[in-house]
Image (cartoon, rainbow, N blue to C red):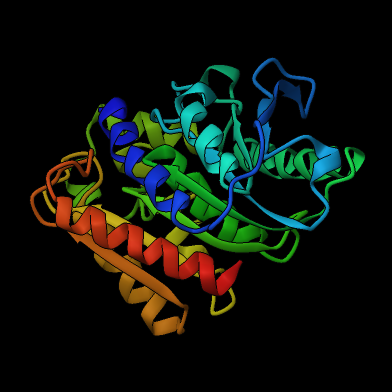
Length: 289
């Protein structure tokens, strides 16, 4: 399923190529840059050219892989970083601590913060000034992208221009989730929050579940947001997208909600909506970068 999501994103490469009327030289990559002491706290950073050839400030894009907070790797976005950076962005793809490292959403958000700080500092050391950053992820990566943007927009080491969430779980208290809360779903929420959640004690742990849900962290000041949900998604209920769209509308947050009517979690059955998505990202990049 993750590979289907990644395959969907290949169209983004063509989109970014159209954003610029020029091309830099050979992309420069630094792999496995440590942003913390843990084995998983590493990232790959891509420059559009040799640092000495980059004289203007540039924007950045950070990709956060999915995999249910328990699998996946930064290498899933290697080609995206290469191609997007080739068109003028500084890009990065990161690993982060997951359930196997006893990480909850708190540690995962901390890793994003540390990674952005490292990206900014390394660029500065190399003589590159970063302006703003966009954050993008799919599934678990989309959840973390939104949750970070909604809780760290005032403190992020780089201003967050906009955030993209592809099929992100946004509300773990969604009735559609609640109706399907079997042992697997409950274990996921338990690992993510660090609290053993059962059907019997959900009401006693609403605060921590809400803290892990982007829906409850949204305010009128959160960054512009692009949401993509599959109507036939059997992993993240479509109702999550409907609720997030309604919440952001109520708050007056600039956002776009795209429905893929024939697609599941892979968003791979609606080419027309995929094309529309590229146009939306083009518009956001033009307005918010």
